[in-house]
Amino acid sequence: MKKPTVIALLMALSTLMPVGKALSETESRAPAAIDAVNAGVKLARWQLSRMADTSHIPRATGGTRNPRGWEQAVFWIGLTELADAGAPADIRKAILAMGAANGWKPADRPYHADDHAITQAYLWAAKQGAEASVIEPTQKIFDYVLANPARVNLAFHVPPTGYNDTECLTRWCWCDALFMSPPAFLEMARQTGDARYRDFALKEFWATTDFLYDPAESLYYRDSRFFERRDEQQRKMFWSRGNGWVLAGMARIIPLLEPGSPDRLRMEILFREMAVKIKATQKPDGYWPPSLLAPENSPPESSGTAFYTYAIAWGVHQGLLERRDYEPVARRGWAALTRSIQPDGRLGWVQQVSDRPEQVEPQDTQYYGVGAFLLAASALSKL
Image 1 (spheres, rainbow, N blue to C red):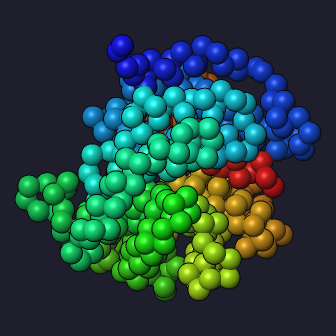
Image 2 (image 1 turned 30 degrees about the horizontal axis):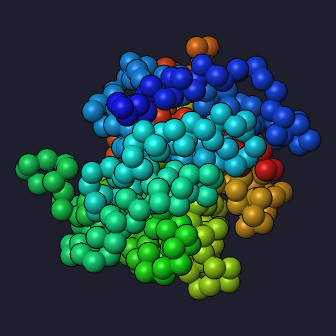
């Protein structure tokens, strides 16, 4: 019997998704919470019905179309948190259908953090009705990485053969990696009881932080190529989405660490320290600028804004951030995100795949931007 593709399964599911259906799972919750989940569900269903066609994404590539690649993976990660926030059952079913269609396999590069991102959805599925064996392909890759650790430094040097041949990509030498891979290793440790996965994730997380974090600015450089880079006003270049990956990554990592443990306490301190800077760089309109220290004349940008809104709302809910000071930050971010929804239903103003600040247009959208919006909706619903 021919195995159904992920696209075929998702298209079938999307026909069963009535957009106007009330969210019975959240009927007893405050109206603002229901509104946030409803907004997330509406956008999620819009995106689920378009997984077969990337024509709505301005700079789609083969990576964009890869159902196991990081661009789509972040969408599925957002979907897992939306499901946990009380979304209707079709959201959970879509995640399980995706994993089954993918054969529960990570993407192809065993060391590359981007190719680990999809496994976060698989590990979630293992706790949500999928068979426990669904984690085995991921565990096999992680075991290989542990047995054969990469022996390179974190300096980001692109060789003449191209970006993808950069040696340090076998480690977490770019700040985005701190969202993509560590939560998966830590969840694997939790599900298997094997502390080696946790120890590896924390060792590499702190190595990357020691290398890329600028304590004078409380922000991360995207990678070492940006250490000396300055704009025309001699300001350091700190990419909004890059730091959004980190802060949102910590919001997913911290709950997986033992309460009171040295690593958790250290990461909570780092989270609060970064949050102070992120609060200070939010623009009056609720967005964050693509280059965090260069707000003037900057366009709206929804992906970085969504990651910060998620992380700040999560920090308030967890008691790590003072509600009086930080809830307004999250609310302004959420208001900006809802204004980013375009008349055709897409999330607009999403900077396309890059490694630095760039211009963005109202119709620009991407899977990972939608995933970040779903994370924000889920965290807002808990406020």
